Length: 484
Image 1 (tube, helix red, strand yellow):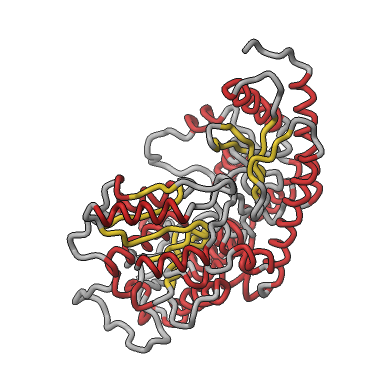
Image 2: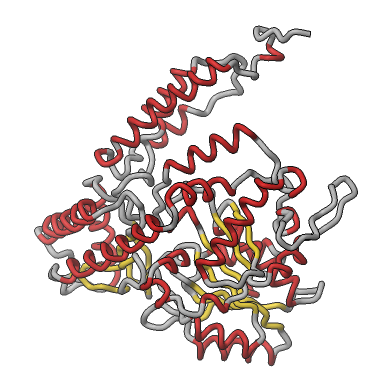
């Protein structure tokens, strides 16, 4: 029977001319949007609540014109956000979102192949396996490592904890204890809870003056837990914390983990890809001795959000933790060169994520990624030197990668007043809308962070950041000293 495209049953099958039109209309707006990024405000959420309420509507019974939908998105909704794609986004841990991956997603979503089982799409499933091996090469893992792409570092940390639990603990695992510094990302604690552990089974260990885990305090905690009948089994080290970019002594942690029979997992979501640089390899010496590592390509490889990854040194450990049989599945691979992703991951159904990384790597090679990371390290060092020239600025956390944390100290103010002053300072900086900075609290001090990581951030924007810091400080210093 011939298809009738006016029949609603066939309406979702778009004819070729409509497909081209949809992409062309979207591309016209996307190209204009990306070209205007340097001129866009770094943040504009003043009317965000109004924008959010405007999309709260019942399930539509009839459609709207495509053009009007694009206008709504690009003119009313996209602008009312933190501009995480722009060069002024120096907040949290930026990424930027290279366009190559958007094209890869268009291709992979359009062909819509299932890659959870190797037999369903052998070469496409293998692309993700190859990407994981490339990542293993970057961090110095042996050929037997295995890995997968996830939606982000949170899912990677969860998968790592489940793998370590199944490798190191019995079925009744509730005496197992996980150790991490008090600077660890909150996703580690959440992952432990989701993996079945009480929250109290995650021990937060104090840090030194560089915000790195203290080995002496760690050893004391392990000894105390063993004395009290608990089972220490996992240590989480940091390769770039969110607060300060701190990198633990990974070689020392590897020695300690071997001594205490602990699974060593490195949360390198932010920092591990700096292993592409000579400075990064020096700071993260020992990461190659870990049992597993989380890396986020949507951070230091600049990919769009939704691209995380986990590597496990012993690939068979990852498979043992996730492999399960079902009669409706085809036979799994016995060839060690090939991977059924469903046997290495919590997911059976999964997106074809491998193309997101594979396509830009194939187009450019690794060189431009390495060069961009080197530039971000240079820019952070420059920004730190400039901060030192500003009277009253205290560097609270020296950059170990591309984060520097600082505050303004005004004589005569106690800690609460200083914290309030620095909150006003960051508001003044951000109000200028050329950059967006975020703050955090370190030892009770509210500090301001600069994180340079977007591939679109270059010297001109970091210079603008320092100009806005100076101008905001000038305004604050003109204000009268509050009563204390």
